[in-house]
Image (cartoon, rainbow over all chains, first blue to last red; front, side, top):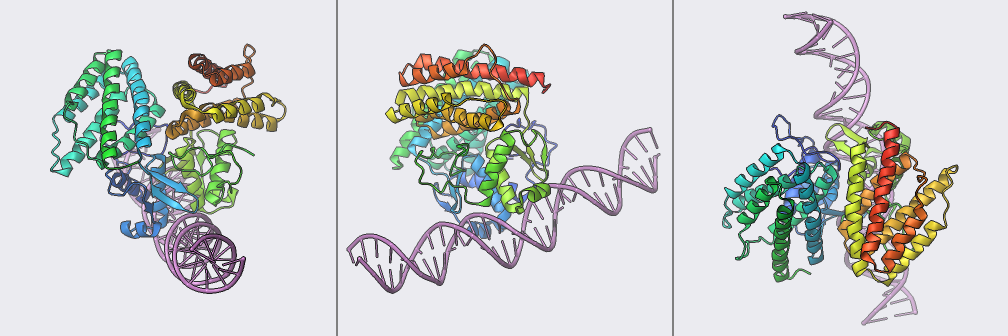
Length: 245
Length: 245
DNA sequence: GCTTGACAAATAATCGATTATTTCGATACT
DNA sequence: AGTATCGAAATAATCGATTATTTGTCAAGC
């Protein structure tokens, strides 16, 4: 149901799994399941940024042994959601204004580049995937009162952005974008961004998508860049409000 | 001696350690040591690309238990040097023409961007570090007959490139560049690239460095891009020669 | 001859216990 | 008062053994 995970995880170089649904999902081992649960817990803010992860407590909380716990945490390190130091254990990756700004800047660079490449070499299936992702996103309302709708919208939003760039044929680049999106989503969900009054995010998405399938490189890329930039600015204000350095 | 490692590893967000040498190096736990050894073994080609890593055999080879072995391998996943699949274990990341091309393309994008930023905000210390790294590199000869000189040169070369972009103030970006450099070095060392006749690599480095400290953004960035591109082309030819798809 | 299924060997994942390291508090010292 | 030093408690790392999964092989059935 949640399309948040990488599927068969670990390789930096693997392509995305095909959308067909014949799979056993890859959530096989305890380590994998833990990685998923922890990832969601961190991105959703359930686990406080910067806080220490006590292995013993975590072990009891999740009812698992140390080995899979470490295994799961190791994966989140690759995701940039957990930090580790020899003999001092793990902690939830910190958030900061500086980090948010870097994430935003790099998204502008990398996602836009990936979109450019996707427009250049993406095929018709890619176009179709975009239109589908856009439609599903636009048909889904965000109701701030009900958290589950928010999460659903977040998943679709993430899916839309990943689909946009999925045609670029560059697995590594997609991996980097995936990491950045993870980090970005943390900020959004942590500070529950209601879109600021002067934005129509739905329309922004539509414009990007239409530019993409129309193969209008400059238009689509510029719209995407603005979209990312605005989101960054928005988040920065929220962050500043809550007094994060 | 080898400046290959991240030092305190794991966090995607940490800055590079200062060059001062008051540290206990971070190579504390068995897991860390293993990660270093394995990283070197993979980059140097000692472990064949794409080959399976049998945990039992590796355990015996390195005389360690499973836990630290997995720990070490997990780190190399973050580095993109090892791939993993649930219940099917680890294997050395494959190499391919497509991957090499992507690595080269992304280096052009990311390193050049990082250099641009470094020139914009790097301080005098950054400039000094470049000149030092350049000097050390230029003073070191590559003698194809003696592998140890090659490795030494590789380390200095890597150091030079990292120093160039170290002033950009963007830890995540540096992390990405670090990964790409790792992967790139694999290709170079696997296919033992002697610089092709029409290149003077030493001069290329000098030009980039001089452009950087002179704050000539366009000149330095263009030289760096060409440098990366030529290396990519060079490697591609070697790869094709050896019949890698 | 080819597929299917059952079994055995190989391999990966997990567990519980043990060992090493760090952290914290109390005490002694300047 | 502040700092250094020595444990004990807390925490992380590692080990050896056990369990689960996958892979390979061989025989039965079609």
